[in-house]
Image (cartoon, rainbow, N blue to C red; front, top):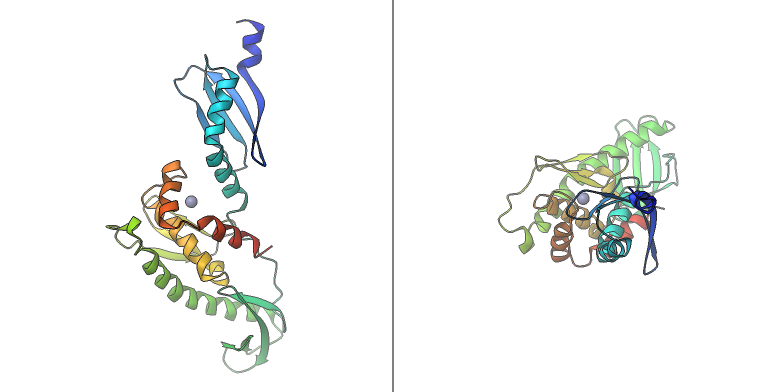
Length: 244
Ligand SMILES: [Zn+2]
């Protein structure tokens, strides 16, 4: 092996694409085609055939740049970043993208009512923030159950999902994701989604419905998502910015 060959074995490379810079690690090995992987931590790993030139790799990377950026962004931001809450009088909480303030009062039975711009919460112990949190969370859960089901039925009417049988789904509290789809085709939706707007909820549901057809974030997946919901990028941006 010559020394120039050894230098080519691995290395950090940079690709500038529009306003984006993609850093990737490049290695050469006996293989027929270039392979590109985006790791959950955002790093991009590229394996090239032994006889490929760095220029040829750059050209191929440029062709896949849109896909790489989408993958990277998804890992970086597809998840809820909710400010911590104290569950006290006057605090702002969201429901379907709108803000409401807590008005907490003492009462025999726990209840939640939306009145004007307020969440009117009654609890046997109005000074216990964990009691307030519990009653509000169960209210969210109840409403999410109904609302998500309605939106799921609506999203399924897209011609892209014709012939698909309605999937089973359930609500989860997830730290890092708005939704997910299991290998068995069960859709999980984050309870915190009920705090975002219906348009963002539809986006997450449609994203997960696409996974019933295309399991991974391949180009085919994004083609399908583009057809099912042409404006998904704007919705994703809204979803990711409104909680920061
Ligand atoms: Zn996905």
